Amino acid sequence: MLIRKPHAICPSEITPPDLFRRRREWIKAAGAGAAALGLSAGLPGAAQAQRIRLFGVRKSPLSIDEKQTPYEAVTTYNNFYEFGTDKSDPAEYAGRLKTQPWTVTVEGEIKRPKVYDIEELMKLAPLEERVYRMRCVEGWSMVIPWAGFSLSELIRRVEPTANAKYVEFTTLADPRQMPGLRSSVLDWPYVEGLRLDEAQHPLTLLCMGVYGEMLPNQNGAPVRLVVPWKYGFKSGKSLVRIRFQEKEPQTAWMRSSPSEYGFYSNVNPEVDHPRWSQATERRLGEITKRKTLMFNGYGDQVASLYAGMDLKKFI
Image (cartoon, rainbow, N blue to C red):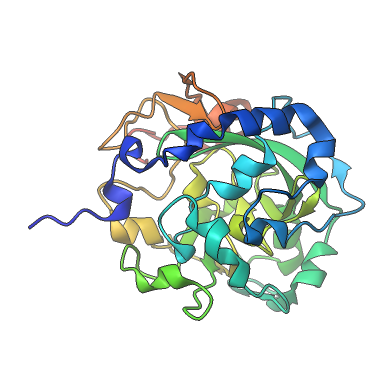
């Protein structure tokens, strides 16, 4: 008997019916601009609990100038399987996540291993607001104002050795706080990875905030990765370990579905997922689909990283 895992279901089957019923509210929130960001009425408890402003965040020249997806959509429609596989589960259940105290262990092929607490991380470099496109492998996308700094700032401080070729990212796996860990959809903990040059690229963001506020739990508090030219699942949430190593990391989705998810996972409209096309996408809050851009529109900045590679083979 074939048992379909949650990630094996077509997007048209898993999109909640209320997604488009809420469209008017999202448009209203977007039109309200900055004033709307101060409102919490109507949001799930987990989203309300995290409305903490970030101060001293500067605008980044790396931002795109596109209409941002409303806060409500970004914080109530998520993939964060540690809290459940439905898009509404993270906002519903992530409120139980304790984000203080929090430490991130940085180790492996580096000269200066260190355990950072979240306060130390936030002081490593000035925080910047970067408006990035984000594209999910399931066919939906967002435009989100993240706050953080280039991961390269941390990498420079820990001084990778000559053996460091890859960076592995491990996220929290605590069954007491994360009910989704009872599911066998993935082999926990959630692990992702980048090549060292990808991790050092200025666009790769170590992120602590969104919309000028601290990250809500459901979006990966207190610290996550954001890699805007790759599909969203590459941007691990609630990080607890960053490890530099010589060999390519075996990521969570590669272990779970090696025929569907490769190590690189660059946004490439010319390579379909085995169960759906990647040629188009739908922005949350919009009805009309749009063409998917190569490297999610960041080709001018990152295409050189893959010069000479067959991007249909190295997916």
